[in-house]
Length: 337
Image 1 (cartoon, rainbow, N blue to C red):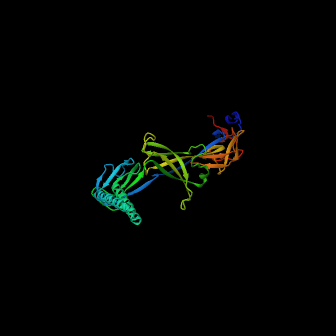
Image 2: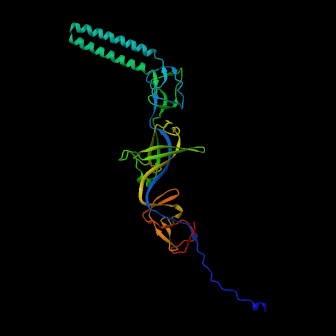
Image 3: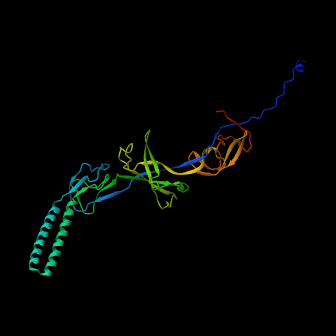
């Protein structure tokens, strides 16, 4: 009786659950392209300094140590000059004798004899110049501002002509070869620009928890492709890398750096998260409470973003969420911010 007398429960229509999505209004415009790469710092110029004379090393400068930085003109070592001083003295005596002989035959006025005496005098002067050059070459100095990379001789060692004494790395400029993939090459702007400036590049290195950045320029794109990796190489240059008045700290040769290369600009483009891209070249927009699938043209894919070229209009609401099921025309609601 109780069951039969209970009131009938009200009937309610089952409500459809509408998914919530995040959206963002797009604003197309010029997008500057940044290309990321990495490489190792190397000296723009480096030389093997060899001995041009033979002899024993009698003096070594305190600066002659591997890894030391030396200004151009610094005397690094000296070879025993005694044999070359004697050679200069002999050459001077020979010049004097030749000058005297020329004076004698000139007084006699014999043309053939005069020509021979003049030739001997010239030869004596040439030998003197060579002797003076050899003497000067007993003092070995740094030809430019450099870091001593390798030291091959030391005090008391006997060196031969042509023997390598040291390997020097120039410090006025350094370069970094940056591998660039073929799709990124059209965005590069290496070399001097029409306004006289250079396209910039930022080099970054980690020192524990500290990050340092150096500003350089895009010098040139090598006119060759690596036959194994099929990549191009952009050469970046940094001037005065050891000058701490210009840079936060020296940019040492051999340092591994990350590079952010400033490329060209894509007009009327939009940067969207990679997660908002579907099926490689489609996005979902929010229109009138529903998902609308839109085909787009992908100009460039980056680590976390994608650059879309001219397919989205100002104010379009791009759907950022990824649902388990997403189809064109599906009803959705926008999450409140």
